[in-house]
Every structure is written in structure tokens, then in C-alpha cells.
Amino acid sequence: MAWVCLLLSLYAICDALFGKDRVSTGRLSKWWLLAALPLHYIGVNILFTSLLFASGFRPIRSAASSMEPMIKRDERFVADMNYYRFVAPRRGDLVLLRTQDGLVVKRMAAVHGDTIEGKERQILLNGQLQDEPFVRHKFPIGTDPQLDTFGPIAVPNGKYFVMGDNRDISLDSRTASFGLVDVQSIVGKPLYSYRFRGSPFSRELN
Image (cartoon, rainbow, N blue to C red; front, top):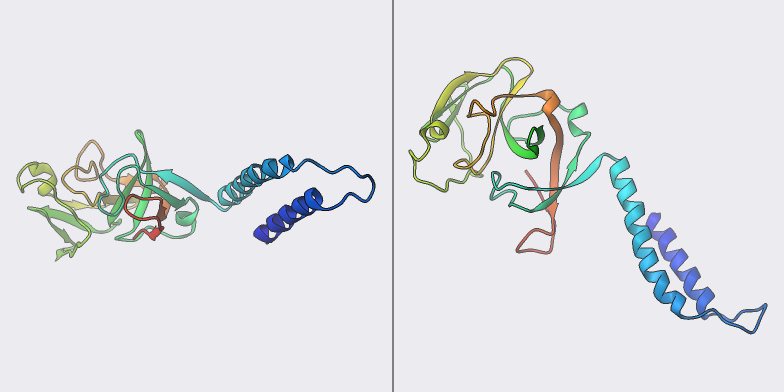
């Protein structure tokens, strides 16, 4: 409906500019058409940006490379800021977190009641070895033993254990400085990226 209204208004402007004036013999300057196009562009942006924000969606730019290759540094994506008001975070979810350094994206590795452990980059969740095809390692094993081997950590009620996909450089729940996160820190769910390098199309994030 919004697109229909915009197209009709553009048609009305063109009709008024190029149609004959029945009241006077004068005619509006055709330069108004050049002004109408950027004004419509501005109007479209204002309209859809307002609808986007009112629906709880936000455009976000990734400022880190800790989620590569899923989300590249400087990649832009849309997040649903209302999603986790109604749905509890689940293992494997991408979550948008608010930290002291700003908004960051991590992957939910363990929820409250789980026990998680890392053994030389192998992740054990409740004693079960996890298959993680999305994980990337940049450095040889043993470069940072704290990130390669940790735990076991029992996740208490109201807390969550998160990690980045780019495991060798991600600051996440494996370190004491980051630690477990609480539900108040989870502010949104990344949905899809757009204008990312190497392709003109958007793609779903999961």
C-alpha cells in the first residue's frame, strides 16, 4: 500500500507538471520534476525507516570480525530488537548483545542448566561433542590455550554462554573479562545481511 501511494503521488506530480493548465495559459516549470524525484527518494526513506523502527527492526553495522565468516567486519545487517522479548534464546542462535564496548553479535553456545567444556578446540555440551561447521580458526592450536581449552562450566539460571564463530580472535564467555551473559544483555536477533562484500543480494543469518 505504501508503494502504491508513492507511485500515485509521483504520477499526480508528473500529470500536473506536463498537463495543460485549464485555469491559465501558464505552465509549471519542468524543473519541478527534477525536484520531485529526490523529494520522493527522501520521502521513501523517511517512510520506510519509520516503519522499520516502529516494527522493532534496526540496521546494524558489524564493527568486529569475531563472527566471520558468517558476519564480516563492516557488514550491515538487520536485527529484530523485539524477538527475545517473546522467545527464549536457544542453542545455536545468533544473538545481538549490548556490552560496555557497544553492540556485538555472538552465537549462543549453552543455556542455563547446561555444562559446557572446551578440549583443544573441541566443544563438549553436556558431555556430547558438538558439530560446528560454522567455526573458523585462524591460528595453530595452542596459540592461545585459554581459548582452546576451558571449563567445564555449569551455566546457572538466568545466564548464557556465548562464543564467536571466529574462535581464535573472539572475546566471549570463554574469558573471565567477558564471562557469562544475562538475559538483559541480549537485545536482538540478527536476521539478514545486506550490501555485504562480494554480492549485491541480502542473505539470511543463521
